[in-house]
Length: 199
Ligand code: GLN
Image (tube, rainbow, N blue to C red; front, side):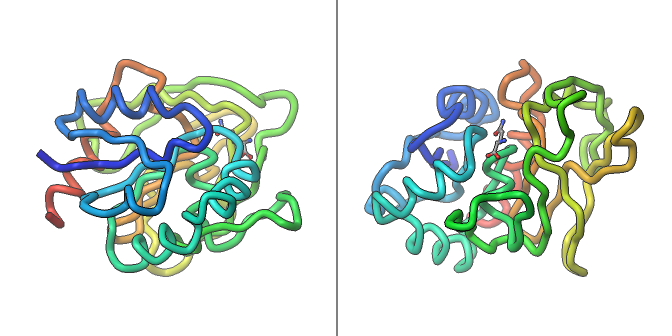
């Protein structure tokens, strides 16, 4: 059974722990650098990215986590987690840091006031058995992707139609939305499969 950490400094940690367990992983909360040892993968939850970035520094996890992912530890970030994994972030605080694990430019709170939070059925590349129920909560979108980044999903319709909301680059996966708050854990299964493939 792959052992997958969930960064547990802030955000919707429990939902990811449940989703990972349902997807066949053994999920453990990570709050200290020592807890990165023996992980086969790590999930960065939704929450507030600038707060998480600050707390990562406070507990001494920022560099160890960045180095672990750069060294090949598979990672999945949802929403604020996507922002943390990005190489460039727009509309963030000047002191916010990010892990530079995905060659993407992300805009925070991109969907604006009218559609700050919404749900939609989203076809996702790699999940061929129907769309995922995607819950967006003050979500970012991806404005630019580097050559090695695979786009997995775009908003299907509405004012933000065509915006990129799920990406993968090698062992790093990110979604603007929150699959952990629905009962559908296929995105977590996709990640656990990525983790299993590298163990
Ligand atoms: N708006 C949050 C941020 O900028 C992300 C929201 C979320 O994770 N649901 O970090």
